[in-house]
Length: 307
Image 1 (cartoon, rainbow, N blue to C red):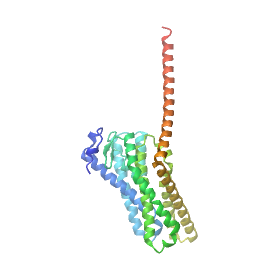
Image 2 (cartoon, rainbow, N blue to C red; image 1 turned 180 degrees about the vertical axis):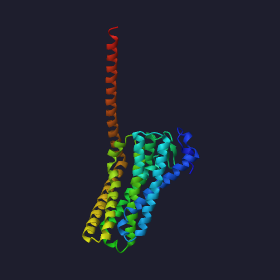
Image 3 (cartoon, helix red, strand yellow; image 1 turned 120 degrees about the vertical axis):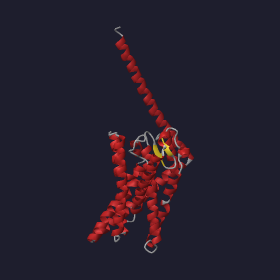
Image 4 (cartoon, one colour; image 1 turned 90 degrees about the horizontal axis):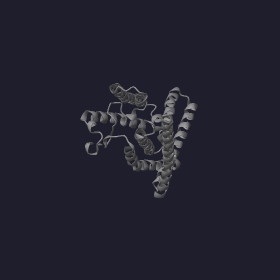
């Protein structure tokens, strides 16, 4: 993959082969971690006998995490910046390794390496570009929830007789979760105001976190299987089923939101409301600037008055 034709003109010095190769490798490692997590989120409770398989998966998770851990730590000390922001980025990469797909602690100046785009300046233009790039694929991913809901609603009694249906449910759910996670990681990394992005996209964050919560319940389920506590085991199954049904309902709501915002009239109204909000913010900023300028001029006149 040759990124030079689309590389930002503000990042020419960062396009050297060594840095690009390093970022490609760490992108693949972080993506592999996320894909592996997506695949196991919905299959743990059916693999309780496969102790060896889960030990191997756990070992693979550890190797991938350790790669991100060591590379980010080396980059942290190479940069030599020990601010709260740099330390927070390091901690984020340790806690959420998939963020290494876009973030780095290495001293690469103001630029980020983005797959298919090369070295780019993380500004509003790049954020808008990736937001547009994600919009259509995410709509198709969200549409995938419809056949999943149909199977669980009308064909649940056939799932035990047709393992292919269960495979489709697991794969489809994992694919949806993976798509939402990728979009959230990339856009949240590039957003100017992280808190504003989280507040605006809290529903997407819930879509990502709910299956993780169900996954933790499944870990407990495996322990209960080994202990043979049937009553508690059934309660865990029921709770996990409720969580995942709630998750699919939230994805369906997000689907409706994305479809509505693609309607030209609705989109136009949304953009007008956004413009009005920003104009109000600009008016407030101009007023504050004018007040400060008036105050500074008055203080200057007072100091110059006795002369």
